[in-house]
Image 1 (cartoon, one colour):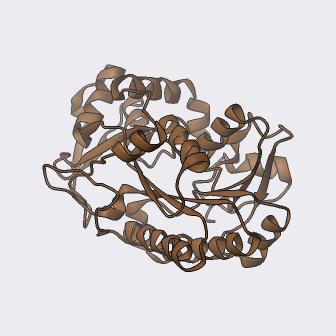
Image 2 (cartoon, helix red, strand yellow; image 1 turned 60 degrees about the vertical axis):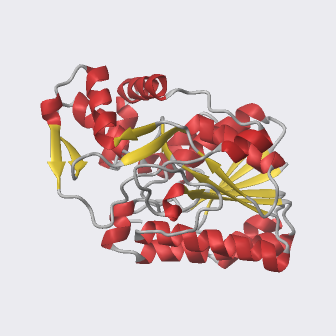
Length: 340
């Protein structure tokens, strides 16, 4: 298989590439990434010299650049590339519409033209909106996004569905719950809480901290995507959840406990607009049809994640300071602007 992975230098994408290279050494992986602020080539340093891994810098909204990648031969696509930070989308929705909607449409056009065998649209449970205190998102739950970010992802999902229904493109949509694990950009809750706690800095928590998320270890997610890619049914949606519901404040307190830090570091801040109260996924379909099961329980996975960040403080420093971008410049001799 010659597999195109978009956004492979990001958190989930880089974990997925490392997983695929380990599990399928006979596959060739082409990583197409624009290297925006959250794309870090250093995440893939351990595979960068492997003969079955290739990196191409490019923007998914650039029709010519996308076409050039497909001309080289692409059997299947796993599409991660997206603007994904809710707070940034509230500040300015434009990049989210451009990348998440237009970029997906450009990729779908190329996949159709060049006849790929499978196109996996990696999405999020946020497209479903918010839940009350009970119930779960299923694949049949109507889309009701509440932030510009989730609206752009829902739009991309619907485009993917339309390309399947209209053109017969073998598209599958996966929707995951909140991921955690190594190499996550430090603006997200788990790494932010870990690093701030380690440095005895305040940890900002939105509202009353009782927003509930279903937490999924990134490697369990990668395992699910591998099954979806190989055995998923075109035209279908597969929800992927860890069955680990926890309030944000519980997650932060657990991190503080693991690090032996006081809860006085918690600082409640004004809630963000449109903050969904609860997400919870019913992942019975992927369990039943594809035989997927999560390996990590949340407590062990979170402890392992805390240990990873504390053991990789140099990586954390380079990401937080922007120095990580020099890795690409040294490797390829092309300068990157911090604002890109």
